[in-house]
Length: 209
Image (tube, rainbow, N blue to C red; front, side, top):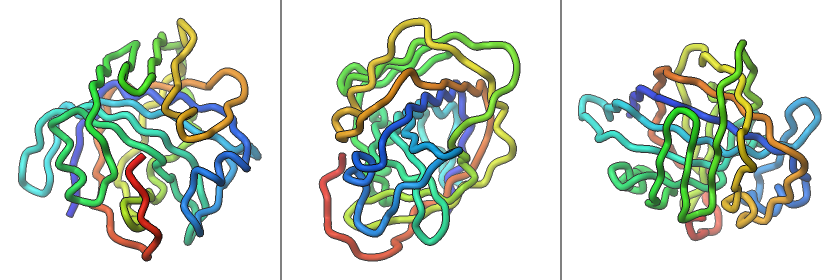
């Protein structure tokens, strides 16, 4: 089954991190991968303006995730932690390890005060390249490792720049060491589809981060 989404105000802030702290945040059998020779971790914030699960409409919601690149049966984006607004909290029934949170995502800012995340930014002229490619396979851990696919066209990335120091406590709570200032990219509007995750293999159960 596929979830179809119309996305608005996607912002992606990416920091360089080290392999050792990233490896501790990943489940057994999943290996940290590099982007242009660097280990990166990203905060991803967006709001779903419209969504459908198959033929069923889904209420609007906002989403915040921590993500990184990994190797597991090929290259994939691993989602380390996720927070959603209440309308999307039933996603746990489909194998998505999300916790409800108070989020506000709009052009120029993404705030999740309960988990210590704040990104304030301005759009910059010209196109940009995102370090994470969301057309790659996705992986999450929810009692077991689960894989899903994403179908989308080219995301219309733009450059962006922070206008105040970011808050990134969600990443620090995962034990990640961050180096330097993040790179930031933004996409105003696009559509894509996400497959409901399917189990890959058994793994030791972990509480949702």
